[in-house]
Length: 236
Ligand SMILES: [Zn+2]
Image (cartoon, rainbow, N blue to C red; front, side, top):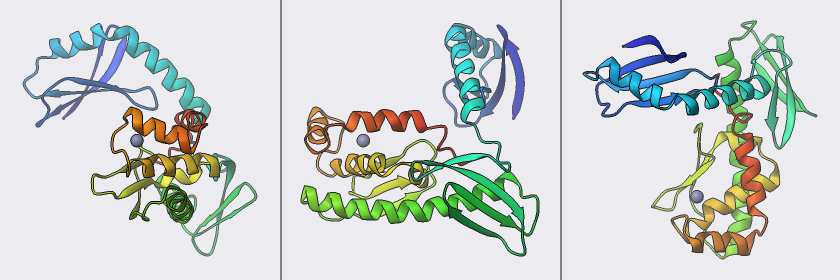
């Protein structure tokens, strides 16, 4: 059940959830405010939380909207996407079959069902990114395994929206298909980061010392990846 409300000048969408214990307020990528609350929670408590966080929320809304305008995707002909560290312009054309080809900063996509929906374009691009991420990550995992003297771990490419990569307690490494948007240097850092977790599972001082030792400039790559978060978004 979703309702729309407004308090202290902030418009929000409220969802009442069964298994929700607390009131949570989130600002989405487009600047929209989403609140989730337990069923029995009175609206006055929801409003109190929003009022208490008014300043912080307003600031976040402005930043999100600006970033959305700068880097958010239109999913239309001429939109640009980051791939292998380079901007690629989207060319959408009608065609006898559905196809996608990549060359010199260009994604040429043809669809029989023209014009395609954002979802259809997203699906095509995700397929491309997944394949590229798998190939590039595998190659880098082999290189780092050799350098670090580690066994080659199992790799999974996932459609994760927030995390670039993760390492499970069993030593499986997961990478987001979005990682195909990174340059070779940034992707190499990401792979090293996840492989370092095979040695030091947590983000401990030893973990960072390990990064310092093997890639002294790792912080620059980390910063770059933070800044690319929105441009790497492939979900319409
Ligand atoms: Zn980590």
